[in-house]
Image 1 (cartoon, rainbow, N blue to C red):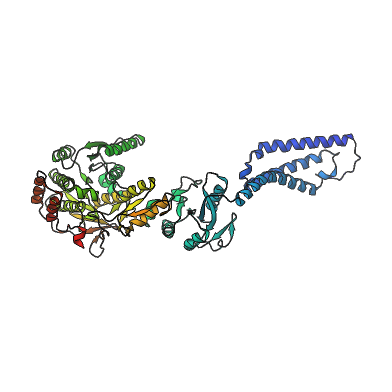
Image 2 (image 1 turned 135 degrees about the vertical axis):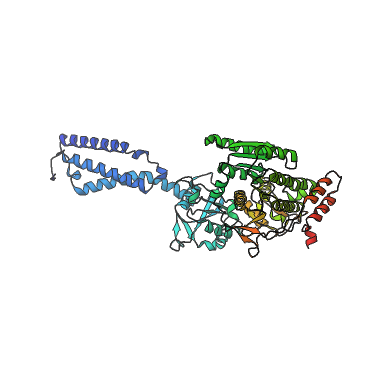
Length: 592
């Protein structure tokens, strides 16, 4: 279409044409913008994508009006020229964009220049996730953080300004940066971190007085828009990768079989039950003296069976004690298990010091009953859950578990059943561990009490421990004591500090840590569980086998101890009797 410049005298026809063109053009703009939902754009969240959207439809409107002007000869020349078309597009885009950007600019300016009160916060990472955190702290009145700086390792970012805040770095200087900005909290906002790098950063932060939170890693996210902030998990603060075991062979071994788990309601026992359930055994027997916890795990599995339409597993839940020989025999004789995982035991060190007879009754007599009946009814394998405290024990609990190990090795020497024991350290979050105690003390407002600031322990997670036990059941050929490479020991004081920070509090300020002194039978330093020079490696790089000692007859000792329950013996008399049988059992004072 060719366009000519016209110069006509103004008359009523011209004015009418202009009015008609203006009305048609305006209605076109309004109708088109309504269809495109331009009017529904959220002003407070407008961005580059929205601006491009406005520009696109402004261009379409300008083109429509330009075409309309060609069909109305009476219109003046300002709508006929190409420069006028460009100016019309620019003006429309500018007006529509400005009316939406100006409120956001005003809000942003206010939020950046108002001295918001809150925790002075440093964000590690200067990317998209970090910007989301900053925007939330500026807009969300319920957010108690005030971001004061970013920290990043990218040399091209360090020294620049991002979202109005300085980018410091590298992350290795985080301790100095925290001091310089007087920071109270740190949020880790890098979703692409490896677990190893995350542990390194957490280790750096553990030496400061700040609270620590983080955004989830990519492999933890529920979806692409998952930008929640989570508290630092205790397992991450242990400073090592979780131990992952290949359970495929173990699943094949247990599939369709009859499995008995004693102590099934406990921390380890219940996780054993969960993992065995995943192997689809034919019959899974839960046996425990504590009805409440056993009922909980039973209901959990029942719900899982209903949800997954699982009907090929017979779930049996029975209440009773392992030191009740008649009850144990009733169960083993009726169900004839292929495998027994013996997790029933008393494990709380200080309580067992005051009740040594009960520790012997459950940990020794109970183990003897299960082991003897496993032999009698030709169970394929029996695996005992033991402890690192059985190594040169200084307490009743450790001594009774060492006695249980000798029972296992004794029966293995004379039975077709394969017996084995699994020895490992403290389990995170288990009943009786320091973690639930510390968390409860934090919830109560403190103080946290620990026996000695220098005390150290080896730790593992409940799933790790349970998976190890099942793996060792696979490797067991008879009489072995399996040991896990648990990595570096953890200082309990450091664990307490990290737990306080995880709760969003400051150690020594919000929650005090008080030293109370070692309890009876408690070691300051846990025995070194792993000696790679002496112990044999298995097919798994983290599982080792303790050299087997010649099995010793224990029948006379069992009779002696059993008879002692009918006597009115004092606590020290019971300990002395135990010490005569387990010659490596000495109190901590005797060792020093």
